[in-house]
Image 1 (cartoon, rainbow, N blue to C red):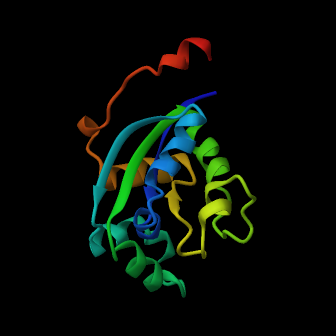
Image 2: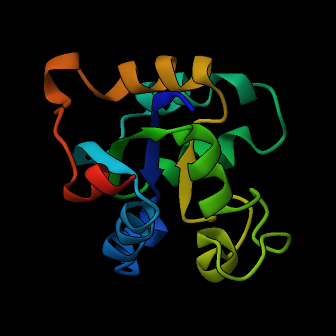
Length: 149
């Protein structure tokens, strides 16, 4: 196993629905550490940088408009195989395909309003974390349960 960091963004609809604590709790209960966290209103520039891989796709403008419509909570999560673990906890992008018990399966409404964004690879995580966090904003610490893992 490799300790990794990955970016998560709790999207505007989830913030408005009061799901921030639930989402963070599920990630922590899975043994992941939240090493960076902030609420912000994402600028169009940041949104375009985040979703640059989707530029030119039919849903791009809808995605940009949604993510910039209201505050989001951006976080950096750390743990053994964090990218893979987060992806399993959140479920597939389409909430209709996400199993019950996953964040998107339980709370997602549509592909765009699917509660959470998470990096899908080590390269994406490294690129995406830099969009929202400076290295000095990320905290290292030990969880109380690490001694048992």
